[in-house]
Image (cartoon, rainbow, N blue to C red):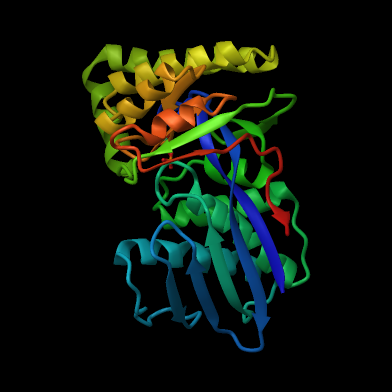
Length: 328
Ligand code: PMV
């Protein structure tokens, strides 16, 4: 039996603009998905998923697909989850050159689903790591990241960026620009606090909305360029260990994302609650439209304030996680 875990992530800077070739800085957070894998002596795949922000569900089906799972969650989510786990198993079979390998897998995650925290990437990364090890192969973190990206790319119809899978596999703060991904060394401690509105935006729709604005208005294209400038300043602030400048730039980034129409009432309410509680900065994270905000605060004030903010379902501390995928 092998257990691997991988972290979720927040965007410190740069979501949406990254789609147009600007750099972005996602950071791994201390919230993980864990995948337990046990090889079977047939070619079947049994997947149990629990402790997700859903009620928990169990899916049992053959590696060939085709069975209809009997579950209590929306079919699209189940299909997506099955797609990710299926894809991870395909990668492991390919790496180990064991096309008939079967597994019992259990997925546990404390990362809210579809809320901008990279939950699916963390599951895929942990699943590939655990399944390949179970077959006797140890991949580097970079190789796991690459294989996980292939799965996300497939499941998301070519829309996925490398950001989530690379960040989850490598841990720490990373810089993503097109296909060029690398870790940023020597970043200061980043005391993240996450506020979650219990919902999720539709990434495809939000990305399409920004694209339409960018085509219609030059100033929307300029706004995307300005986000790129914020990211570059942010990288300097990180290199200088200047956490208060990082916070200011997060605030600026949120304003620009808001101008592009991807914030929401609940995200704005949480951002303002965090700022008023004394956070150094606060912004939405991920595609927006709903889901999560990330704030920087080493005290408990922001988390407490978020807990009293209408529209906030959960608030938790999730510090920068410098470790990526690992065996448990
Ligand atoms: O919501 P997430 O964590 O999948 O982030 C989406 C980030 C975007 O920049 C909006 C889209 C992308 O593919 O980079």
